Picture (cartoon, helix red, strand yellow):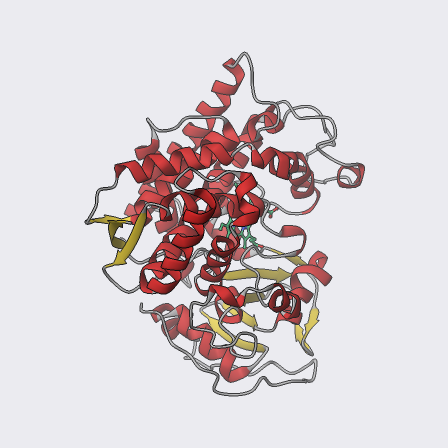
Amino acid sequence: MQEPTHAATEPRTTGASADATPDGPTGLPFVGSVRPFARDPLEFVTRTAREYGPVSYYELGTYSVYQVSDPDLVRHVLVDRNERYVKGDLFDRTLRPVLGRGLLTSEGSFWREHRHRLQPAFHPDQIADAAETMTTYASDVSAEWTDGEARDVHADMMRLTVEVVADALFDADIRESEADIGRALTVVMDVVSDRMGYPVEVPSWLPTRNNRRFRRAVETLRRVADEILADHDRSADPDEGDVVSLLVDGQAGAVDDHAGSGASGNGVTGVHDGGLPREQARDEIVTILLAGHETTALALTYAFHVLGRYPDVERRLGAELDDVLGGRPPTVEDLADLTYTERVVKESMRLYPPVWELVREPVVNDVVGGYRIPAGETVSMHQWVLHRDPDLYDDPLAFRPDRWTEEMEASLPPYAYFPFGGGPRRCIGDRFAMLEARLVLATIAQEWRFEPLDDLSFSPSITLRPDGPVEMVTHRR
Ligand code: HEM
């Protein structure tokens, strides 16, 4: 579907009786709004927010959805009242069969303990060590390109980011098995996308083509995770701070007292400095492989695409890179001087947020924006909607990196911009991703200009995926 162009049509509505159901599109009996949603989810959620205001209601098959489209109310759900919410049924149905009880899909004290265990791998000092890996892989990709060639830049970025995650976080070189991993990740994301679109679940034991492909792909990813774990076991000199060491060997201090205190009720005891059971370690590796590469690949792909559409911005970026780097690869120390580069990344993630929607379920009734949301219903919040809200951004559909001044950021309401989510479940890889996006962009945009062959067109599922190859002609600068 093509990128919709929306202007504000109605002011935000306010106030409500806690017993009333919010207004929203009515849809058809039994299926509700499945059809218009499936036809163009981005257009549907944008129009719904603009027409019905901060909280709206609609049905998608068996799901009753409360769409929340106001920064303060998003904060209410993600931060102020986060303890009342879980990721819920949609995550259980789509991601849990692949990720098991990895960080993205687990809850409660089990999640908290794993989050604290992994946190040291994402400490700024630890991440800074990954900078050279990021620029090296980016230079390798750049060296494969030739002048005037049409390339699927999305495919290149997917390969690059999966290699970076494996090397930087797992100390594993996966270049030989990269093709298998890439195919498996694509199948998994395709099937997850399909399942998200279905109001009725197709049982996973049915021998459908999708179920068979899915099972094989999950097996491949688990095998890769097992190999990474086996390599770590064999290694005489494992990297102490990396994800695999934290999972397998643990580390004193990886879990604070607070996190370890509660009885988990799910079989996990407070072992802080020992290893996790094999299956749990494997789930975390597959989670980080999946969560840590597609999103960053999308951020980079869309940044290159939009740069190709805005030659003035591309030229200004090129001038900054020439000025600061003079042709050499960027380092962490250069980042303070690459201010325009950072603004390009922020602005392209505003327009094209790699995660376009967050979903939650209240475990007890909550009141949001004056409306009662019953336990077990679905709450959805959209980066896509708020990042393009004309009440929050001037000329919201224009790509203007210069809007990201310090003053603008200080005046922007929290959660008007939330590419990495927020609250305790905020992305654990946010700093890693920002480092990678800036370093890879700087490495590649020093050498290349982009000429997109088509407009962007999306097939949104959990992430804002393109609905086909994102082909661009690469021109040497
Ligand atoms: C531009 C790149 C990225 C974007 C836009 C992004 C976005 C997000 C968002 C929005 C969430 C919250 C999901 C929710 O609340 O339901 C999240 C969670 C997560 N992300 Fe990222 N992410 C990116 C890169 C990464 C990287 C590089 C890693 C790891 C290397 C990573 C690992 C994770 C994990 C493990 C979670 C679950 C955290 C938890 O629940 O404790 N992400 N990400």
